[in-house]
Structure formats: structure tokens, C-alpha cells
Image (cartoon, rainbow, N blue to C red; front, top):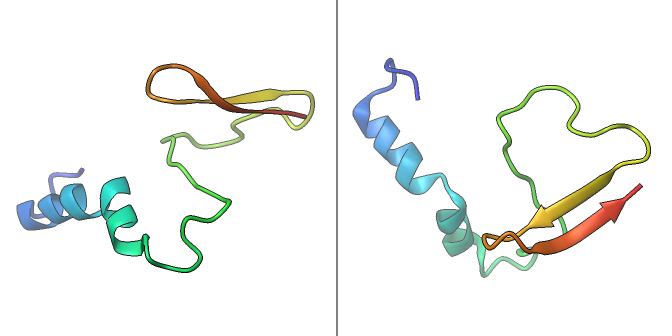
Length: 70
């Protein structure tokens, strides 16, 4: 985070804006969990080719959770 952000703001961002807090806050929502998730990859521009590519989703143990071929 930039040095121009206050320590209190940095602490809030790192402790409150994360996966665990999101789940704890929204687990009871009727539309959570849904069938769509978004992740931040810190990358700009296209992530995959527009045709003929395979996308694998891995768990923390390196095992494939899901695969999409297109």
C-alpha cells in the first residue's frame, strides 16, 4: 500500500478487506456463495487467449479443482 495511506487505513484494509471477512460477513446471504467468483491477479490486459486455451484452477496443495477448455 502507498506510504500516503494512514496506518489506521492500512490496518483496516489488511484486516477487514479479505476473503475471510467477506465470507464471515456474507455467509448468510441468500445469494452467497454463488456460482461466480472474482479474483485479483494484479495484472492488466488479457489473461488468456481469445480462442483455444485451457484454464486450470488449483487448490492450496497444487491439485486441480476445475478445468475449462475453450
